[in-house]
Image 1 (cartoon, rainbow, N blue to C red):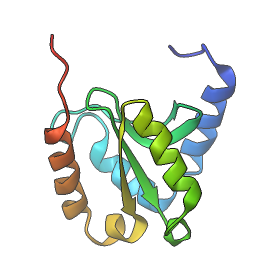
Image 2 (image 1 turned 90 degrees about the vertical axis):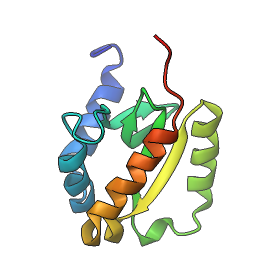
Image 3 (image 1 turned 120 degrees about the horizontal axis):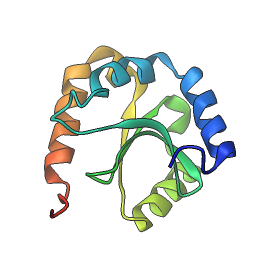
Length: 120
């Protein structure tokens, strides 16, 4: 999959390099299957957008938002489009990640447990 879409790959690299402190803080706890054994990737291209964090196997998108996203119509449209692609979108505030990361991780584990699991 790598290298198929160089523009998307380059954009994702830029987004990872300019991550917010909340994104970095959460990534430290999600990377290397640390959360329930689920694999997350960050700044993953998906349906014309870039998901802050994506767990493909659970079809879960995690977005870390600042106050500028409160009631944002564009975010609702984005969520609807990602939902139409079969993904669930969870939005978490920056300050929640910074002030209570354990509660955020518990909530994400709950979301992951509720996800449909692929049959093998």
